[in-house]
Image 1 (cartoon, rainbow, N blue to C red):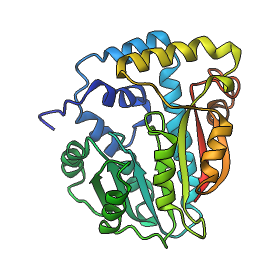
Image 2 (image 1 turned 90 degrees about the vertical axis):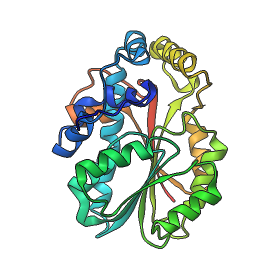
Image 3 (image 1 turned 120 degrees about the vertical axis):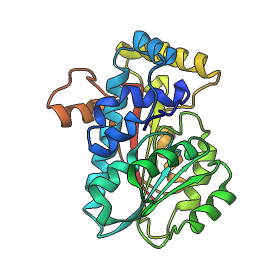
Length: 277
C-alpha cells in the first residue's frame, strides 16, 4: 500500500510485540500496510517495566494457533468466530492454512473493522468466506442478529476465539456472549485468555505482575479484569465445559523444549482457557 494505515498505539501494541509471528506472505503484506513509524509510549513503557512482554504475546498467540491446528483435524468443515478481533490478522492465517476446512470466518469488533476491510480487500482482492462485522459484543441482541445474517449456523461446529477481550470486559458480559453461542451438543470449541489475579501469581513474579498492571491501567485509564483459575472454572461452568488451562510455561516448553522465560504456572500475566460450549 502507498498510504499506510495509522492506528492508535493500543491497537498497534499487540502487532508490534508479536511481529515475529507474522511470517507468511499475506501476514507480511498486512503488517506492511500498517504505519509503525510513531514510537508507542505504551509499548516502550511496558518493555521497560516487563521485558518479557513480547514473549508473553508471542506464546499466547502460538498457543491459540496450536489449538486451531488440533481442532481443524477433528471436523471436515467448521465455522470460526473471532470475537473482539482487533487488528490481529488471524483470519489471514486461517485462510492460508485451512481454507478448505472453513465454511465461514466471522470477525466481530466494535472498532478497526473498516480499517481492516481496506487492508484485506487490497491484499486478498476477495472476501470469500470472510465476514467483518462491527458490533459491540455486549449488545447480544444485535450480535446474534448480525452473526445469523452473516451465515452463522449454531448446528454447525465452530471455533469461538475470544482472545484479548476478557481483560477489558466483565465476567458477566462474557457469560452473556457465550450463553448466546452455547449448543446442546457442546460441539463448539472456545478459547479465551485471561489476566491472572494475584492469588494465582507466584511470589517470584509478583513485582513484574503488579508493575505491568500499573502501566496498563494508567495508560488505558481503566481497571483490568483479573481472574483466578477457579473464577474462570466457575465462569465456564455457566455455559460450557472446561477442557484445560494452558499456562505460558507449558506453551514455551512445547515450542522450544525448554523454559527460558516462563518457569512455572502464573508466570507471564495471562493464561489460556479452552472449553466446549
